[in-house]
Length: 195
Image (cartoon, rainbow, N blue to C red; front, top):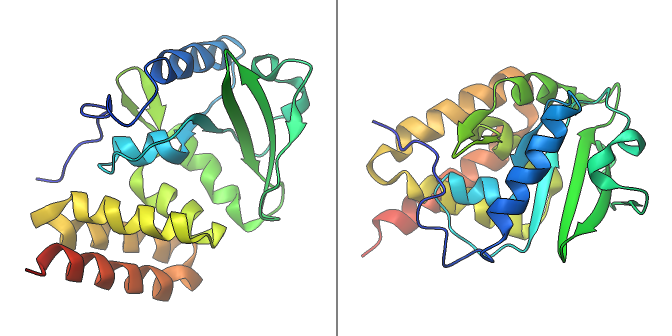
């Protein structure tokens, strides 16, 4: 049976207030009627790779006007993102909150459905592993590739089943990324089984 997402064990990798602020941000977005899902380091942690993160990353649907989000306040600034996404950033209680959305009309609009299907983890909607891997593959950053490898390794004995599930998601939504994903699966499998 595959590992269910959880924030258990992340207390050593996160500033203590981070999950509380994430819950407050999520509650405000719900109150505003904005579908959303946690992404970034918190989502990576929920999917098994407890790495240090100091910010809260949130994905909203492509039709949300980021400038109208109350959670960002009046001092939100643009985020530098790949052209497939738009985003704004703000700071609350010393914690950076990055809210992004797929660019309207772009290939990443498939993530709009993934937001609706987010898994609730300790009261927070967390993007499922397949869509999270898709976002990380699109970013092209080495850190995101490493996150994918570590999340796959966290599935341990179920790595093949987990990789197959993610590959199936990619086949349906972004087949052009399968070769990159397969390379990361090979890396994760090698690292997991080397002695």
